[in-house]
Image 1 (cartoon, chains in turn blue, purple, brown):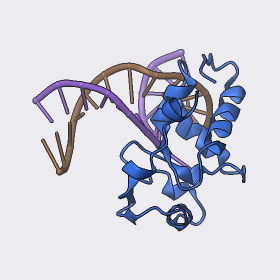
Image 2 (tube, chains in turn orange, purple, brown):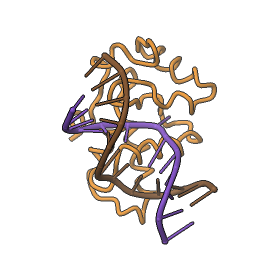
Image 3 (spheres, chains in turn green, red, yellow):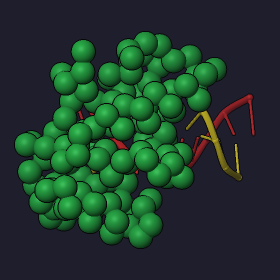
Length: 116
DNA sequence: GGTTTGACGACCC
DNA sequence: AGGGTCGCCAAAC
């Protein structure tokens, strides 16, 4: 839900990010910036990355489906083991080379377009 | 309480 | 294409 986050309620921001990430269909990926744009003012791509950091403990958040705007696996190092992110994406049809999703264009899922 | 640090991104060379 | 700069904003120090 688009809106403002004053960061007094950053917990809500976290949960909105997680809810949104859960909506990413299997076999599709999106970017930190797209999520930030969807959530609106007060959010930023850095904050989404921060939320993903915190999401590491939450099992049902498919954090591997969030990459940077070039399709690169910038969060790879934060998975255990790091290869896990790449493996999960490959299982969902991603072609990865040099930590970069080659078919990113086809897999890209933009909440600003797909969600009303 | 200023500085540095990021799972980022947009610009400008 | 590849790099530097800047805006972003909470945390850690």
